[in-house]
Length: 368
Image (cartoon, rainbow, N blue to C red; front, side):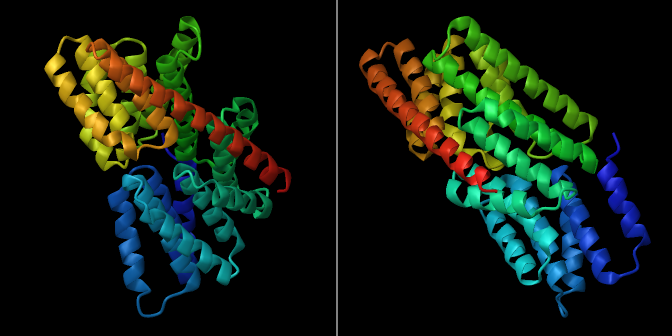
């Protein structure tokens, strides 16, 4: 499937004769290629721009290059320094009074801050993007609307997330940005998967409802994979398989889940998912135990126990709950009780964080 956005950028690049405008368009194209997973092509373009403007830097080119490099860093491995690059783009574009680029950088900063659970600056950058972006600045608006939708969804307010998802989709379609549509589908599916795994390990819903949640999330992940294949995208390739693996565990399809984990676990660590290491390992231990591989399950459990402290609160809660399940299945009821208690406390802390985030979003977006 050809991208309308990429075709539009290519046409503009072919016709412009102004060197600064041409350089900015090439940097914008590199950012799009990075979102498609074509990182080598994107980085070659950016290296060429650095060489061309090394002796005579231009603010607009420097800002666009910083933005594209930040997006490259994020889609390569969700690297923390991606945020530094985006902050540089934001500062440079503000100083040069490049409002469209400033609000685009603000929207991307809000996204990375949400991923880092840094909610106060996330809300500030989200408001900036929504307040200052022109109505037809679709690139900034789809990203900002997706951040608002994802934040509300993470906060447990799917009802408030839904209209923001709809707006994000409208702006992505208007921009001809198929990579944005893929991102929207994946973010929504992964948040549904998070809700499904909490329901599965904590019994937050009856068995039928939990199964329906997991099945709906799995369908969303499968749809994302099909769409990504159709548009030729390949960004962060481990993310869809490991989310699929988690959902297959919840459906009791442990052999299929384990095969995916064994194939993609190391790549997931390289792709920036190390914060989920404890949960993945607990899942793997559970699968191996269900398949009669007790010795291997014990080894995975030991690694999971070592990694659990590095998780975010919600991930730590589900990791601890899965650890408790594994311990109980191994016959260690005392330790299973300890870990179940830890899981319940972390889940309560996560619920409190959700309430604070929803209130923060309500206040921030009411003022935007």
